[in-house]
Image (cartoon, rainbow, N blue to C red; front, side, top):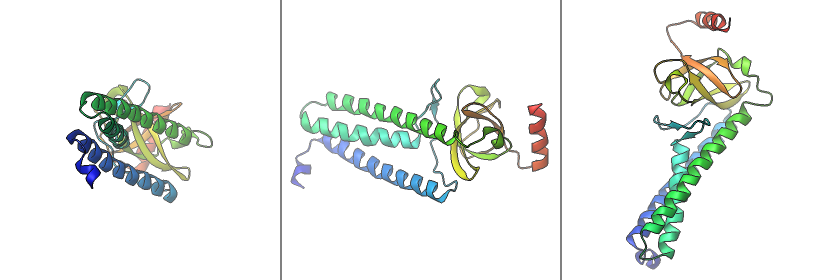
Length: 207
């Protein structure tokens, strides 16, 4: 433990941030693998407050923020250890590398989502399916959120928009009204409605 005692305060802060974030990242990877292997909808929650870019990227998700602190923490730790007495450089390096990880995870998840929604997946067959909001869906198509569901024999995650004037929060149940090239149009599921009524409403909207 002599090496740890010799670390600066900043190095110790970066060390513990990176260790905790790395453990959480490993747990998330295990949960993701188990979820896909089981074919179920065992998704883990994301922050309700997400930020969607114009390209449909979802930033500030649990996976993204964990990667931000893990990679940024380790790079900041290495910089703080290698540049003793310099506090600003390690902080800037940590922020830069963490931000790169944030965008990297967002791009990766978007790519996975598109792969899951391509190939043998027929988008039209998803119309009428019930899904769970994974990343909150902004109101009136002002941005994209994400939904998860099990369809056509596999678990999938997809981008979603809504015409609802109110934001649809994480964990709410929604119904898919239509399927576009790479996203679904959804609305809140009303538990009071029967499936027959919902199906009739969807058919009317199609017409």
